[in-house]
Image (cartoon, rainbow over all chains, first blue to last red; front, side):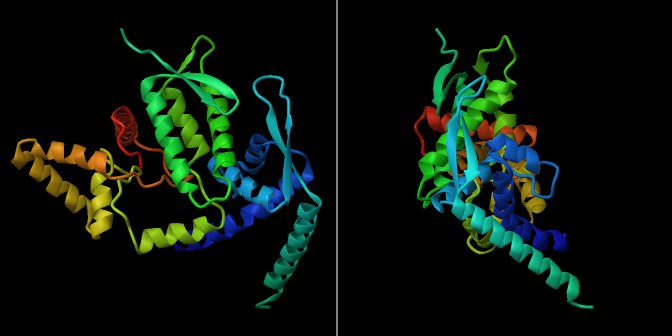
Length: 107
Length: 191
């Protein structure tokens, strides 16, 4: 699949954007994020998500707090920082711009 | 007397594992740690992964079951997937595949343990031809090749599994667990 091999890096690059979007919509823990992405083109795994969230936390785009759960150990709930919100807005704007460019070009 | 299980502390949970499952988990965490080399904060990610393993295994235990076996651990690890380092992953994965290909066993698509697949990739050979040659050698050598194969299984590190790739067949999954068990048991270097 020649097309597929070109699409995979696009998805990989966009995953961070989507995770920011999900975390921006509400405070979530990792299984929520996985569920939200499952069944989409961006379905992913904990082995991918934890390193990504760790990077986003170091960049101070997300932060987490521990919340007690009814059963089992406490859970990490992630939410956006102000910097994360600003970056998400910038990405959203850029994405719309790219979409317009792609739609317009070649006409 | 026989040891039944090992008590494992995984981040904020404690679980019982049988020996084979413990060895497999130890191998998975060692592989994750080596993939995270160069990450500024590997400990946080490893703790998160440990917690994910604990949650996934707990969810898979039957109500009357207390000890985690490979039957619970394998699907749990498959769902969690191997560690993908953001950013670096895309570039390094493709260059590692194209240019400098280390001698490894490749579990995906393997018949026994992936030694032939690994050799074929390293030397740029046709894997089917290599397998036929190996079977011929097996018949001619009267079984001596089996020892060589097992030695190579112990020597070659495992190629990291591709996330979202096909599930491992029964025999490659078993031999992977077996080799990890032997490596831990005899304190051999894990890949």
